[in-house]
Amino acid sequence: QVQLVESGGGLVQAGGSLRLSCAASGVTASAYALAWFRQAPGKEREFVVAIRWGGDMTYYTDSVKGRFTISRDNMKNTVYLQMNSLKPEDTAVYYCAARRLWSTVWRPEGMESWGKGTLVTVSS
View (spheres, rainbow, N blue to C red):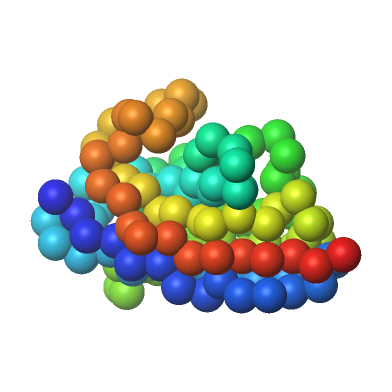
């Protein structure tokens, strides 16, 4: 099972930017697809974006298209989430998750490994 550690969260004003990182270790990380989910207070965990480890496939939820960009560094076994034009509604704990199957259906219950999350707070 792959181990995941997120970093990069913090407090930012609306319109600002943050870059989250997800460092993967354990079994061959390249066998996995990695995704970012987020969970706002009082809400269910929701899918944000995913990338196939080879980097040739990405999938974004509509609310972040054009603002968020996912990328990976194979040498560092790390996936990044660049978040621009942040809005107060982006405030949430952001989780990195992994599974071996690539598809365009991403649900929390379908993921095999999770990080502990990193908090992003966007002030208005």
